[in-house]
Image 1 (cartoon, rainbow, N blue to C red):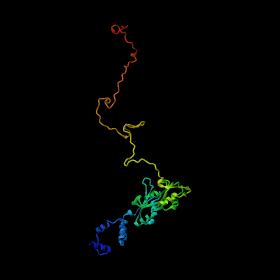
Image 2 (cartoon, rainbow, N blue to C red; image 1 turned 90 degrees about the vertical axis):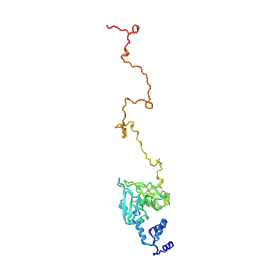
Image 3 (tube, one colour; image 1 turned 60 degrees about the vertical axis):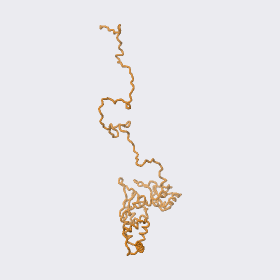
Image 4 (cartoon, rainbow, N blue to C red; image 1 turned 180 degrees about the vertical axis):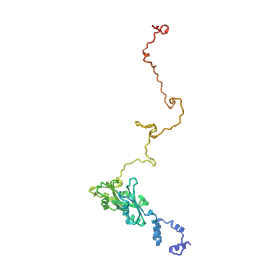
Length: 329
């Protein structure tokens, strides 16, 4: 029976035993992704291709692009205008900061059909408002195809740029060494003026090496600095705290105010002293005891006499040691 079923499937006979969905799934389950793609691509049935297309298009995650590297003055209308060449756009917007109302330098484009998305991904770099923006599937985020292990060897820092040099001039000058994936002059967010440096990312490591080794690095009347972007970063080593630890300043102990600072209340720093019921005591001062207050040695003092007494003469003594009294006159 099994041999007959297999032979009929191989022959493509339409009157053989029809497999249930569960049986078909059990046959497809051991196949890997590449085998499944190859199998579906070779099927001559039109309705199968249509079904695959409809399933892929139904989920917007396959039609939504993340666009980064936008100029600060790029609007949602400008963004959509640059991407509509690939097909009908369902939604597109630049993301703005809620507090400042300024662009955050990236946005999203959602096409109506998946074919438009695939066409846009074939040319991911687009020059928009003087900056070369890059797109990838939004579901990939920054870990898309453009973020590769060799990126540090392909991304260059361009320094000592003249204020007159624009992103178009920068890209045009460095494109002679190879195809550029991403690049722009760095502009100030507030003034939109050049900050005197920029970045260029080539599609190959070889092109980046050519740009570094090129002796003629004169652009806009200046000799520009060209080096790997990672080598330009500061190398100041900072002490890393263990995970979960947050640096903080501990306040001084409650009840001990800072020297020289007046406190409006008896409880500095907002701390209140605990109000515990203390028993009545007949002592006017804390009793001394071992371990609490050290006892002080008693120092003997001579008896004090008043100034008046110090000038009085003792009465004359008579016989027998008795004082002699004179009669009153």
